[in-house]
Image 1 (cartoon, rainbow, N blue to C red):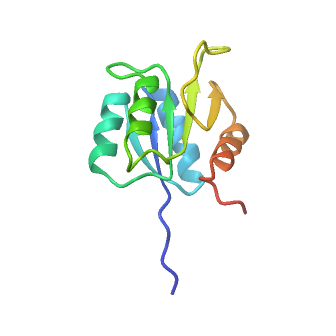
Image 2 (tube, rainbow, N blue to C red):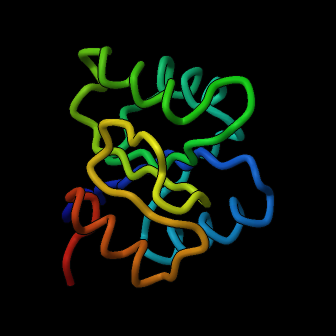
Length: 125
């Protein structure tokens, strides 16, 4: 009997509608989704919880921005290699953090799948 591998992803999104839509897409793709409403809540989850296979983070959230969250993750040895997909509603973002992939909101299921594959979080069928 094979052990089931739980693929956890951390979703950081302050907009309730967008958050639930993305969560549904991720769950349909087989991910266990931890949700944070902003960077500060995400940091709390990352500090005490299991390491996710990827972080999907909105760059502009209250309390702690996605930019600040990415910088903290990259400075933390236990988390530094976790791939990050940055999301933003901004066109041609002024400054982009050290993320492995970027999604411009709104994005399609196919674009999300592309980003997950690009960062190595999605298992190819």
